[in-house]
Amino acid sequence: MTEVPVRIFPASLHQTGKTQLTPLDLSEALSLPYPATAPNLLASFIEVKAGESLETGVEHATSQSFYVMRGKGSSVTRAGLVEWSRGDLFVLPYLGDDAPSVCHSSPMVVGRQCVRHVCESDDEFGSCSLYFVHDEPLLQYLGARPVDTRRFQPAIDRG
Image 1: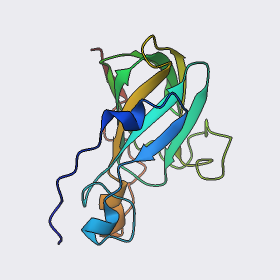
Image 2 (image 1 turned 60 degrees about the vertical axis):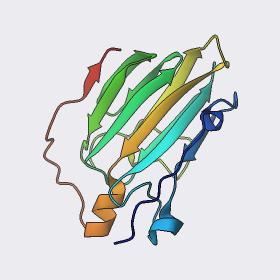
Image 3 (image 1 turned 180 degrees about the vertical axis):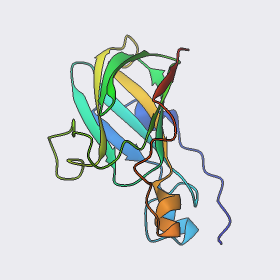
Image 4 (image 1 turned 90 degrees about the vertical axis):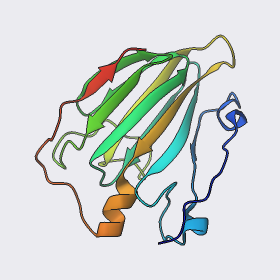
């Protein structure tokens, strides 16, 4: 296995004032055929302009974690609504393939383990920013997929 390189991903990647998903992809340096920040994880910056929304999704991951770096907003998940603000951390388990989808804007996320993020406000850059991590690269490496048994309940830790 290739050594994981040390990379610095500057804050400017999530301070553009635009709505975007920025994967922190090191797959080329890791010699992997799929996006990954480390062999077992993919981290991304989510930035959502105030008043806008962005859908994110993974095909098969055992969990998704979101840390709110900036702003105030909410995320619609297949388990319900999560309202968040700076410093909050929320995690979602794999909810099975039969849970109803909450994403509708793109074939990239429809029907997947998707989440729709909405930014209400941010005084500093005019956009909310979340750090998003999931373990889909590990499952791709193993050639596995999660079972429909929920291993934990969705949770939020208020910052």
